Image (cartoon, rainbow, N blue to C red):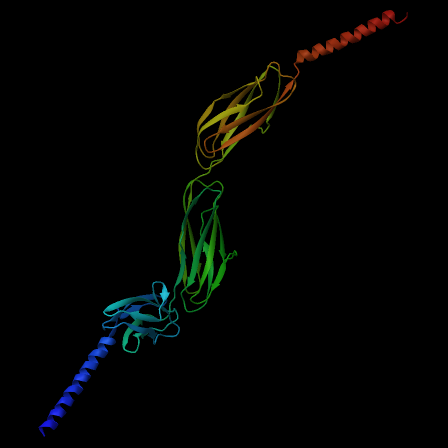
Length: 383
C-alpha cells in the first residue's frame, strides 16, 4: 500500500512538473508581443495614419512569423514596410524586437464611425487598432504648387505647375480663374491644353499649368497673381509671386530717322541724335564712341550721359569733320552708345561732294577749251 501511494505521488509530481516545464518551454520558444503606443486615433476622411509597430520576441529562440493586417475595410489602402521594403514575414532574434512602418490611407468616401483592424504576428500575437473617422466624406478641394515664386525680366515666361486635388466623394467640374494685374496674361492649361474649366474624378487629381507673361513696359518689382478653382460645392485658391528684375534696352537714332548727310572734303557737320531708354531699369554712364574713316574727326556733346531713367530720352550732338583730302563718295561712321549692360550702334552715312569752286573751275576750263577750238576753227578754217 505504501508503494502504491509512493508511485501515485511520484506520477502526480512528474505530471505537474511536465506541465509546468512544457508551459515554460513553450512560452520561452514562442513569446511574441506587438506594441504601438497609439491604438486609437481620430481623423477626418482622406487622411493617412502612420504607426510604428514593434514586434517583440520575449522568448529564448529565434522566431519567424507571418505578419498580417486583418479586418481592414476593403476600400482602405495600407502598406507595411521596413527599410523601404514591403514586409510579409519577419524573423526576430531572442530577446529582441523589430520595428515596422504601417501606413493606413483612409478614402474620402467613408462613413463616420469606429473602424477596428488587427496587427498579427503568427497565430499567437494580435493587437487591435481602432481608427475613429470623425466625419462622413469630405467637401474639400486642394490646389497646391511646390514653386510659387519666380524671378525674371519682362521678357521672361513664367510657368507654374500646380496640382488640383478633388477631395470630395463625387466628380467635380471646376471653373479655372486667374486675377492678374492689368496688362498681364495668364494661360491656364489643365493637362497641357488651354481651357477655362476642367473635370476631376472623386478623390482624383489633375495637373494644371499657369503660363504667365508680363507686359513689355512693366516696372521692376514684385507682383502677385491670385488663381482660383471653383465648383458647385467647393473651391480652392493660391497665389503666385513674380519678381521682375527689370530690362535693359537702349534705342539710338536721329529725331527725323534720317541717318545720312552731305558735306565736302574738309567740311564739318553737327548732327542731332536721340538716346532713348526703352527698358524698365535706369541706365548709368552711357558712353558715346565712333568708328570713323581714317583722318576724320568725330566729337560728342556731351561725351557721356550720367543717368537715364526708364522711358526718358537725352539729346546728344555729334560733330563730324571730313578729311581735307577725302575724295567724293560715301563714307560710313559707326556711332555707338553703350553701358555695361546694353549697347546700340548707329551706322551714319556721309556723302562727300566735290567743292563748288572746283565745279565752277571745271565749267570755266570747258568753256575756255570750247572757245579756243572756235577761235582756231575761225582763224584757220578757210585755209
